[in-house]
Amino acid sequence: MSETAGSLLMGAVAMASFVAMLFFLRYWRQTRDGFFLLFAISFGLDAATRAVLGLWRLSEEAEPLAYLARLVTFGLIIAAIVRKNWPARADRGK
Image (tube, rainbow, N blue to C red; front, side, top):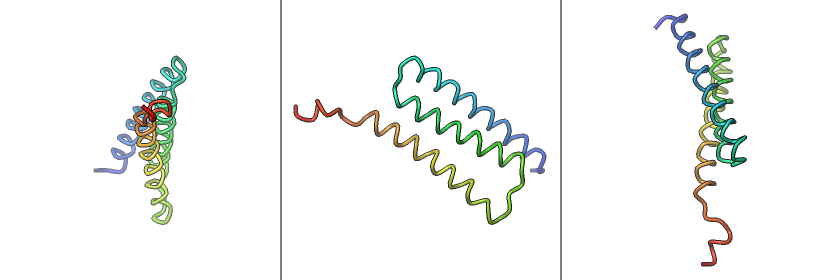
């Protein structure tokens, strides 16, 4: 794949992540549920990371930072799911 096509594809994925962030922010504003906020933050971070990767060519030393950002992104998604499915304190005694 050429470098231009790779940048174009990275931009498209960044845009999709940005739209997903807006989608989850809208639901967070309606419900104030932290689940939607964590998803919005994770998709916003993913959009920013992919935009940087699409616009600039990172050196080989800096490239692992992009993977660190993806690790944080997926960690936020996992934390949101676990937090949402964790039993509430009131339910633990029953």
